[in-house]
Image 1 (cartoon, helix red, strand yellow):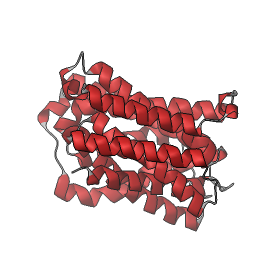
Image 2: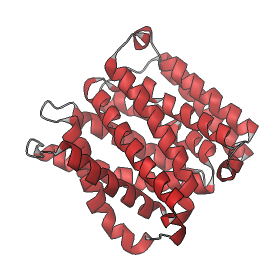
Image 3: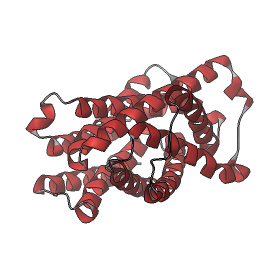
Image 4: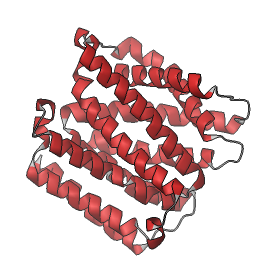
Length: 286
């Protein structure tokens, strides 16, 4: 079933390109865009719930409710940080920093595998080594000297990537009590309510094209998250991250070259070969 995360990687790369094209417009405020995106996701996912709704009673236990609320808060902050950075940085500048997210996710899941039973299948040393090789190859091949210079947008992307990693790893603890669709819907509802109360958004400056793009990319993120959560529950965090989160940046750079005319270097190509090779070996071992 490894082809399902590959589809997820394709969706993530496509969604990233569309969001960048939308956020680079001067009339788009990243806070308004973020809140509007959650609103669209909530509306679009409702029809899916008629077929995929599942919510077990254990989800209402106090500990699980607190974990769910923490996930929602962390996800809100992470989204705002990523959109804040993405609005001002090119994908070529932005992507190397966000590439830290898969590495964070892999390491956090591996560490927790020794302490929490929910992560007991995340300690395969061979898969871990392959994932680390792919992560480091990707990061080092795209990192340039000026990325090490203090820049608030780059730091926002780095922190946002780390928070997304924490959110995703925490999600596995309570995913068994939801369907993927239910979990993502409720998570987005909580985020939408909190963000709307805090920021009081104004959608009047969002132009017609951006509205269309937002509806398209929201559908992409809905399917992407369903695949991601399915992969976490079925294949494991580290394995899913390898295929989905490490392959996706390769596709992002290819798409950026095709659609945004951004430069693709020899280092990008070499890193892509390393990543695909590691994924192929991991699939064989699995």
